[in-house]
Length: 429
Image 1 (tube, rainbow, N blue to C red):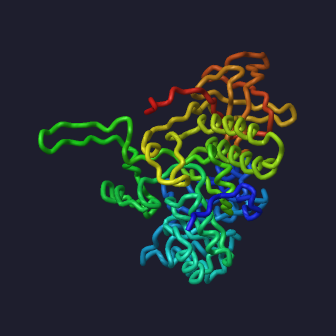
Image 2: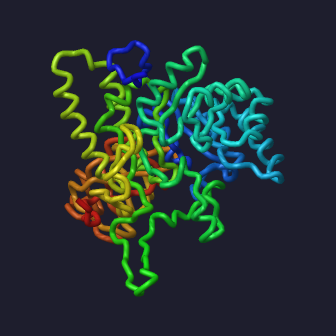
Image 3: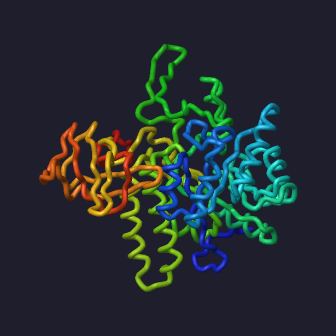
């Protein structure tokens, strides 16, 4: 039987929800400001990203309210394996989720699913479960009433089309990862960190030993080989912009952006790129000349993605099994990096001027600045107008209090950064 292929004109292809990560309150606000339809976040226990700041129990309700006020949904990731002595803690976390109005719980353990269902919470099966066929979808749905399934990372777009067709009678949505870090192990189920450091990747505490450089030794003659700079265990980041048309035509209900441990400016850029790509394809694809315009837009979007943290880009498994684009790079390949300037010590709303204390890196008129804060989220602009002691200047030196004319509202206590081009690590070609 021929495998179904994505059809760009099928009416069955829904406009997918764009789902962004939030490792802290700033990233959450940045994600919704940038256009995310939903945000997924974790508490300080039970999450597959234990090293992220995450949210304290008493901050969950406010985080959910922030999402809902912006018209976005809030999903709680409780996708670690649950040990026997953690059942009460898991139940308490789900009580918090229900009280806060969480829209869905992402789970990988049957205990979490049972406890969530008892509280009337909608459920999403994590990719940790490695669901990769329609029979498995049907079984999990019948047992737990799953609303959504995150398919295994090893699934292709053709697999998604086939699984959707085989489960068309079920009220189940399908979610795919669209961008971000990938794990060398089967859907992230790796024991390397547990063996080397005692920090389990399956408990959200992976120390990422796969990202390091390794030395191998010939046991017969003692010859050493250093695997550098091509880490054989470290995959490139997933990026679907080069084939976003095929991804959208396959009909996923949600596209997930990985990155709860990434910086707010990364979240801002990636969400804005995928927001633009989704909206442009869905609203303009039938217009004359669309293919040429979309190709040009994709080049601009890729240039934007290259400016923020990345390990190089790969199509993952979505277009089939990767051969030569899997473990080329392990270090940051971003073309630009942010450097800390200092805090906003005062903000004068009527003239729209921020007083910035230059504590670390000096900056110059015309450079790009970022303002980050829990209420501001992310504000990006050029430093077009600078003053020191009410006199115009072209340079903001270290130690100075500099008045910066702002193009949007910022706040006292916001952190200010300057964005500068950097030379990325040597790429393997």
